[in-house]
Amino acid sequence: DGGITQSPKYLFRKEGQNVTLSCEQNLNHDAMYWYRQDPGQGLRLIYYSQIVNDFQKGDIAEGYSVSREKKESFPLTVTSAQKNPTAFYLCASSLAGGSTGELFFGEGSRLTVL
Amino acid sequence: AQSVTQPDIHITVSEGASLELRCNYSYGATPYLFWYVQSPGQGLQLLLKYFSGDTLVQGIKGFEAEFKRSQSSFNLRKPSVHWSDAAEYFCAVGAGAGSYQLTFGKGTKLSVIP
Image 1 (cartoon, each protein chain N blue to C red):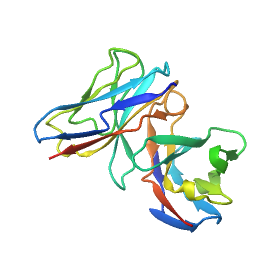
Image 2: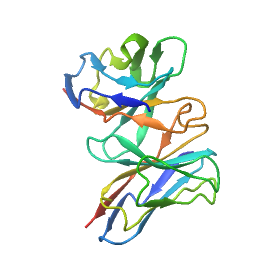
Image 3: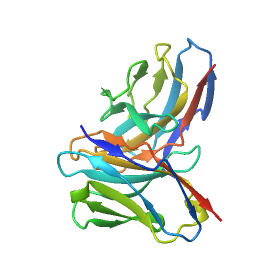
């Protein structure tokens, strides 16, 4: 079955450590996205990528980094510069631009920084 | 820049009752509008979308939404709620072709009383 796989589902880390969240899709979608979700805040866009080897900052990119070396993969690194990294992180993909096409979401990764 | 307001943070309805979730948007041109649903600890699933044409759109799971330009609204409705509809619902607005950014509302949590 086609879809988006995020791993790990739960992650605990100490303050000051970098953390990388994995996102893989087998939908053959060009565009991929990372969103952060906090209770009562909706979804906020961290980074998005329209094609391989290209990505753009979203609304809250500070303290995060991404790469897009393969069409299927869009990993997110939460760096020690992110002041409040505890959150639920959602990866998504779409055929066309997200404003005109359906976003397909993974099941999310919950990061807790101790 | 576009914005979305979902005025109701939490709504409780009885099973079998009708449902209306409110969404108001702000955008200068014709918006691309979406409703997504999220079960606890899961990703989001598209319920329905409006790009143009008939202002009443049908979605999955018996949901429908009506675009009212004069009121800048895109309210979600269901005539008879089932217990399995309990979830969080997000309205989103996009700027259309060429734009990769969706702006999400903060969500409305729906509880269903048996």
